[in-house]
Image: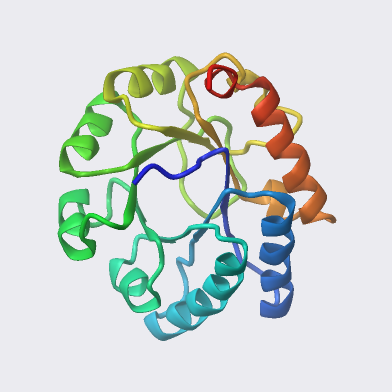
Amino acid sequence: MQPNLTLYLVTDSTNIPEDRFLKIIEQACSGGVTIVQLREKEKDGKEYLELAEKVKRITDRYDIPLIIDDRADIAMAADASGVHVGQSDIPVRHVRRLLGNEKIIGASAKTAEQGMTAKKEGADYLGVGAIYPTTTKVITKVTEISTLNEIALRTELPTVAIGGLNGSNMHVLYESRANGIAVVSAIMKSDDPQETARSLKEQVLKNFRSKRSE
């Protein structure tokens, strides 16, 4: 399955009350995000599943795929659209066997070799970064745009750039092979998530080389 990676929201619920968290996701979906990844590193399985079910009710209303970070079991229980795994998570081949061919599987890749392995094992898209240092709890290492381009070129998989991206700095990707951007803080910490999503999506559609050639 080929997901629309134009504007990929990765959630962060840190210090955000649940009602506000769900409202942000609702506003982001209304503003135009094309895919949502629920990422919860601290919640136990029951809490993660309960939140996933609430988020899925929102994304379903907007016909937007919900991806679960890392946890194939949560994705299966919530009937999410798929899973995203990092290099230290369950390998793509095992997730594919668990979820079948109808679900979306994304994988993080920092090298072309990692990307090729993910493709061989059944990944549908790749997340590449961090393009800039981030303020999230996830440990990141900056990835050069040239590396992103090499990964996209060699794997021929849709590629989403992630890491510290926002409306003022995404220009570094305009001539890259990225199919879209993944954002966390740009939307989760925005005073107006709906307008931020709308503006970010407009920039990607207008300026990214991969979008101009479609």
